[in-house]
Length: 110
Length: 115
Image 1: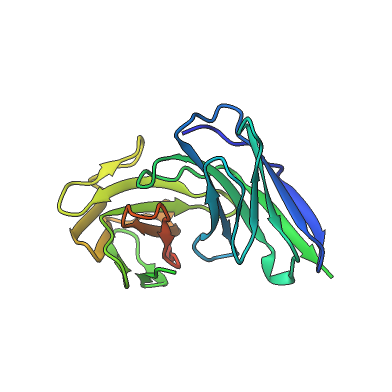
Image 2: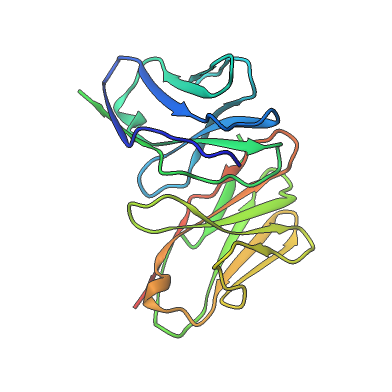
C-alpha cells in the first residue's frame, strides 16, 4: 500500500471547519483513499473513502486532487467530540488490510 | 453501520498465563478479520489476517505460536495470547469486513495488562 504523510497535529476552533490534509504521492490507480479516526482508548471509526471523485456523507467531505496525489478531509462544523487522531490510509481493493500511519491529532477547542 | 464487538474490554492477568479475546461481528458475516495491537501513544500495528476456515497470515515479527488466532465461523474470531508477559500488555483491536462494501469495522478494543 502507498505511504501517506499527514501533519502530526492540528487545532481547530469549535464550530469552524477542520481541514485535514494528506499526501499520497505514490498512490496507484487501483488504490482507494480511506479516512478513519480514533478517539482515545476506542477502536477506529470509519469516516469516508473515495477513489477519485469527491465524496460527502453525514460526517465529512473528502476532496481528492485531480492527480490523486493528495486529499483533504473536511469536517464542516467541528465539535469537541471530534477531537481524535485522524488516519488517512490508501488501500488496494475492498477486502485488503488497512495499514495505519501516525495520523493527525486534531484538537478542537472552545 | 455494522457492529463488531470485543470481549473482554479489559483484562488483567498474571505473567505466564494465557488470555483469550473474542471478536464478534454482530450484524454481518466477516469473511476476513484483522487483529491489531496498539501501544500507548502509538499507531495501530497489524498483527495478522484471518479468513474464515483457514489459517491466519501473520505479519513479519509476530509470533504465530504466541498469538493464536482462530476464525472458525463467519461471526467469531479469537485471539489467544499464550504465556503472556508484561511486554504483551497492549490494546488489542479486531476488525472485520464482509468484502462487499469496502468498509472495515473495528471493535472497541481490549486492553490487556500483564502483571
